[in-house]
Image (cartoon, rainbow, N blue to C red; front, side, top):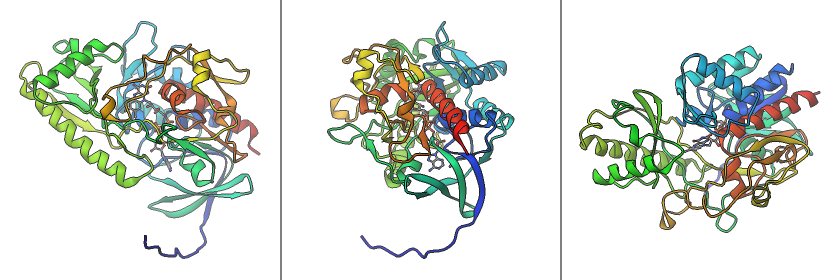
Length: 408
Ligand SMILES: Cc1cc2nc3c(=O)[nH]c(=O)nc-3n(C[C@H](O)[C@H](O)[C@H](O)COP(=O)(O)OP(=O)(O)OC[C@H]3O[C@@H](n4cnc5c(N)ncnc54)[C@H](O)[C@@H]3O)c2cc1C
């Protein structure tokens, strides 16, 4: 490969903070709010133009594993509820769908009230460190290349970008192959009515997914995700997960671009096929597509403790606990040759809840860096359980409080 030598230059240090959070998804938002409320001067850096990460930019409007949670995620739920933006699925409030646009506003309001400084359309692209201590992150945006100083840093980028840029060790994918779970290109649908398509709606049980798959087959298409799912947001608004993009690396831009192009082609084809069936689908249409394809997994940054599948099987408890995870193992097939659904779920019996300990959020390699969300330290199988967003919020809140308390 050809290389060029990048010219060395100086970069302005635009500000210094007690706590710098990289990524404004479920984990990053909660980390920033918690740190702000604890009195820290806090900056939240987000690559895209809204908060929420997978919740919003990827149109994944279903918050799971919240029944045994507390704190900021419950405030988010209450704020969404207050503006009629929540559709509960289960009596115990374990999961709920939400209005994605309302979620963006609720998160911005909570951050603003907590004194969080926010930078949108800005990406963390490098890290400056001395020995085992980070001093600055380098950010890039329309304002150019700038440096931001910090006392504590939290990597909530999902893919572990900041930690990797700082030279931390990490793992990716299945131990045998390095293959990751597929990505999914999600869409919002309208032109259908909840009463008319009631048997096809559902997140938890398999029957609605089976009926939707049969409808696709009847219309002459076979979705790349073998358990296509339709979630109700309002009576006339739904989000749909029917696509799997296999063999895609979340840290390879060409891969992610290809997956996005293929995903969009497929979902338009699938929806056109549904429409061709006539009532109740005759007017179904896509009203939004993800601005960022849904990424199930990227880097898992090595921490002081690695959550493992043995922890799940044993229902392991810890002293220094971040949260209790109730969701089981859920690996979406890494290879369509071995099925296009979730093919580990029923084979491994886990004892839930199990604990996420604080040590799995603390970087093994950098002293003033924590991780929260799907990039914490864990093995492939346990990640498929704890990555669910109810847990990401609790990890973020814990990391925010801890970082604020220990910032100089
Ligand atoms: C298709 C799909 C379906 C899912 N289904 C469910 C479900 O039904 N229920 C559920 O609860 N969970 C579900 N999940 C899991 C859940 O959404 C994620 O695990 C959760 O969002 C993880 O939160 P996070 O904050 O760690 O990361 P993310 O949500 O990925 O957020 C990361 C944020 O960091 C930003 N970022 C990344 N890199 C940089 C950088 N270098 N600089 C600045 N910003 C950066 C991104 O733009 C993004 O906003 C699903 C995930 C996918 C992909």
